[in-house]
Length: 183
Image: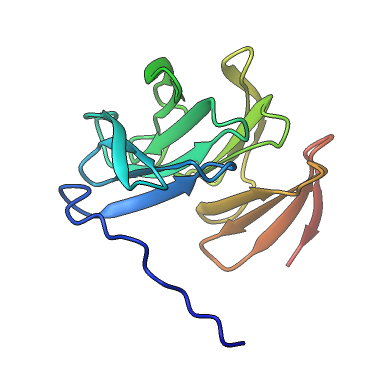
């Protein structure tokens, strides 16, 4: 393979400190970044220009972001366990879920139908949230023995894959949220 990745542009000083997380829209039109400065920034991916900044979006460090598949919504999770739901088109805060988790929210993902999003935390749990109802609709308590660091949903939305601090990966059935397999 002779292909090489080429840098398109660099955003020097895009944030005031460490960029902890980035997410790209499905249509590749924009991306979102957040980190230790507690700001969430929405960028035009093609031009490399800032579209919007949610200044001091959280009271604590932001560790997770996820964009809905339609790119209409954004969720963010922070060190203090707070989750926020944003309108990423009109740049508005829709809802703040204070103490959504008992510890840092390390991972978030939207289900492919955009009806639900999921969060994983240092409290070892995974929560499933209804976008319409704006509340948790299911909790997998003690989903892992250690921090839930990563979440992904299969393209057909049949399975959730979660990864934890101790190296364990689990696959969950999205219909009943029962563990299907563990590695």
